[in-house]
Image (cartoon, rainbow, N blue to C red; front, side, top):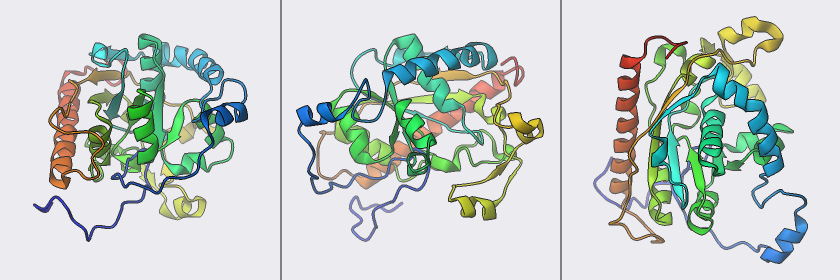
Length: 300
């Protein structure tokens, strides 16, 4: 990492990984319909992001037995997530088909009674059927403009996984060792929106669908970040079913940037990278501590 805050030779980062926020760049303002027109154009309970509370209600009903009896999710420090106002939730990410995102979203919504928007890669948005269902369930394309509007303008809770697809793409022998948190775009968004970052360490997701190895040629053929081979595939038609590993989720202390003015056109690149690495290290140390205390994968 260089010592200069402004590296004008660096090209803007493009999102290609799951739920990684790229560094913010002020785009030209696009023409948008007036709020009244946008409301008229939407039907039912679908909001401007595509989220439907009716769908979320169905998802919560279907996922609740999984959350409570299959994963037996157990929270530590859930009270650190605010019951009102915006915050950016940041967590580690794992599993060939990650179970951590729905588990965190379900826990926050059922325990705190607040909606949680999850940022995800364009790959989900562009996948037929899956993209629509993900949007209806609260998924939003991981773009800095979207994150800023949700946090700054709408005061929502937003979930992001800074490891991107490098997290769930880890093989089993690499479990619980965090990948680099991109270029720290999530830190810049929090600074710009004037909201706290709340780190969450998740134990259990690595064992729900571990990756034995990957097939790059198949991933390229379908345009996916990776194509995993998992032991779950031995279940045949039930290959998408995760193993019943116990989930433990530890919410760490919120990180605020009170010394930073929101809505600035540029922020210190070195400060952003330092904060990003410090957050990654906090989550990593929490994971190691939780693993030392864990009795078994299944009982926690």
